Length: 183
Image 1 (spheres, rainbow, N blue to C red):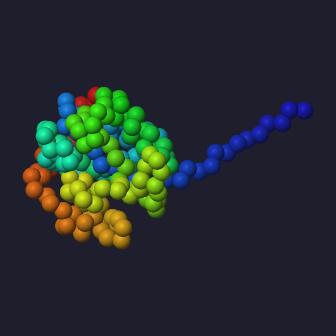
Image 2: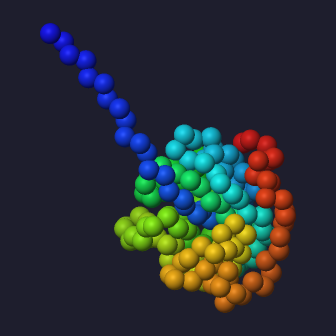
Image 3: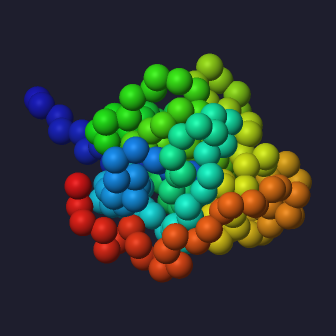
């Protein structure tokens, strides 16, 4: 006698993650928009909100073109390291080449925070270890999550302690990523 077994999939657990996006080679705004559109089209990710778009001076390695930066909040059922793998795949799809630290790039996507998770592995540290020093990360993050607690303090307080010189709003419309042409 053949018995049929009905398997009911376990309900997925969803968490919020904050992403930082940036680039300064080619059409970085389009690359960021395409990445956000691709994330939002997935069954395991939903883009909740996106910051204004910022034009920022280079950080770390300063002899290169200005960057465009933004942040996004996503709701995801992916665990942190799987979300990182998706982000790295998106970078590769946008022709990201890693030649030098802090160097020019078509697209960079960092996981800044992942709800309820503090971790340090070979591939991922959460919260992002250098985000609290970088106004180009904190300014767009403050647009969408000013009260988000990082190391016991809200984003807007961390932002107030950073040098924001040269950072400009490039597009005040937070739907910039939806209206950009699909890549």
